[in-house]
Image (cartoon, rainbow, N blue to C red):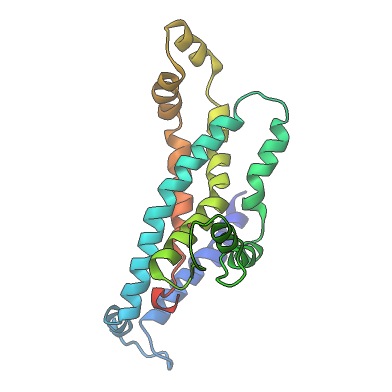
Length: 218
């Protein structure tokens, strides 16, 4: 029964990986060259720059996404009027196409007519426009903000599914024992959310590590 599914997985996932491994140790003529390509790659400054940027981006964005995701999930798990609309609004950034998000944030970060510079200059916070994407430090911070805005809802969706599986009897027992809301969250909610949190971290880390661009070209 599962043979067709396994065959599709082998064809779509495993075969390209194996083929990539073979191509990495051969030249254009198909001759085996060993690890020559890897040696050349390791000796390239652009490789280490890209790797450093990717690891920095991952280390900064993932913890922030997790914190905001848990906070959103806890809020959306409460009972209030318009909860369905609120859940749709939270998922809206994640549902938007990546290309559309990129164009929208690029416009907002624009040095000449971006909305961020306009607001900050009108408020007297800065004297002139800020080149958000032209400075390495500001560009990293800007990209982290975009990633947190877009993917915190993804974290919230996974954590929310875990929250809804926690029996309400545990919270009622905790209230009878005199637990505060913070104690309930720390001693009941977080321990029972370890599974969903680990899944969310793995999925988002895999996605963030695929952002492999050259920092010097920013």
